[in-house]
Each structure stands twice: as structure tokens, then as C-alpha cells.
Length: 63
Image (tube, rainbow, N blue to C red; front, side, top):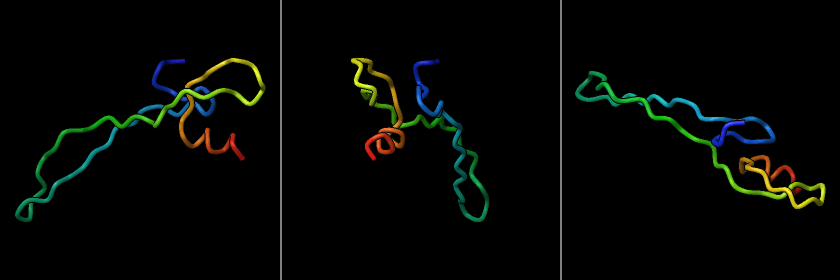
């Protein structure tokens, strides 16, 4: 997988579009790319394998 995706759930980046209202009209703004909160984590299997996982998957593995 690519370097900016979660190896467990395959979550990847997405585009964010925010509109700013200025004096009754919408001001054109640029798109922003939002990335998931990826962190290095060890798998539960006991091996010494580290994977990039999003924070949501790390919390789910801890339960």
C-alpha cells in the first residue's frame, strides 16, 4: 500500500472544501487535503512486525 494509508482498514487521504461567507457572498477558497492520523503500531499477533495504522484501528486493537 501507499505510505499515507492505514494498513488495517485502508483509510487514506481525502479532500476538504471549506466555504467562507464574506458580506453575504461565498469567498472562493482552496481545497485542502486531509490525512488520517497514522502511527506506528505493533500487531497483536506477537510478532515484531510494525505497521502504519490509524488511531481508530489502534484503539480498536486495544479492546
